[in-house]
Amino acid sequence: MGEAEVRALRGVSLTIERGDYVAIMGASGSGKSTLMNILGCLDVPSKGWFWLDGVDVRTLDEAALSRVRSRKIGFVFQSYNLIPRTTALANVELPLAYAGIRPKERRARAIAALEAVGLETRLDHLPNEMSGGQQQRVAVARAIVTNPAMILADEPTGNLDTSAAEDVMAIFNRLNAGGRTVVLITHEADIAEFAKRVIRLRDGEIVEDRRQAAVEGVPPRLAQSSTIRTAGAPS
Image 1: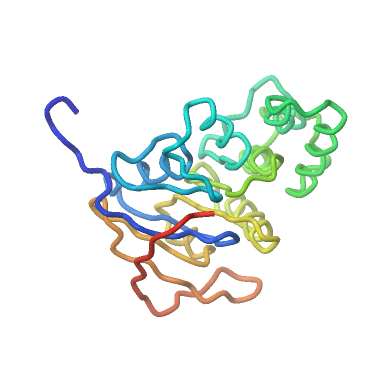
Image 2 (image 1 turned 60 degrees about the vertical axis):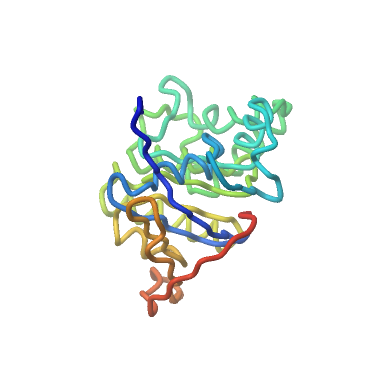
């Protein structure tokens, strides 16, 4: 920032295993947005390493990074980011079209993804014909249709009421139970309780990394806090 140097992250070291369910929390300026951008291959660290699904991200050029983002990471955003005058089915098909998947296959995969989030009766609806919760479920379907190594959700319930937020989090729970790796960026403690693990940032450092005890059918209860510092290759 001009002559000022801002250390957004300071010695952050962690491993996210395949199939984990992680919530990353922190106040504004804590570094969670920078960490999210690194995890999503939208930015690279000025020092250190980031491995995604066995690949050293530092070795990739922009074209390769774009392929990683489209195939290995499923993004879910607070504002849904759906194409307004395009049906739910076409929105979900879009990543497959970019990947060169043939129309018949991408339609079948998009329908299956929408069925997985409970929107099989909304295939031909436009975003303005759906509630906020339904739009976010379309966004989740779009995120999982490429079978990514990681789902990265940035404040996925920030624009939703309590009931719609719980519906979306229930979908994340089911996806994780099926083996998907889920990483949530959130400032909401009640949303973080759905995850199995909570990482809290402050001033660019990890100040807490704790596992939560899972209870079937409800959000995990808070387990005894413990600090874990590990290094390795996130899945």
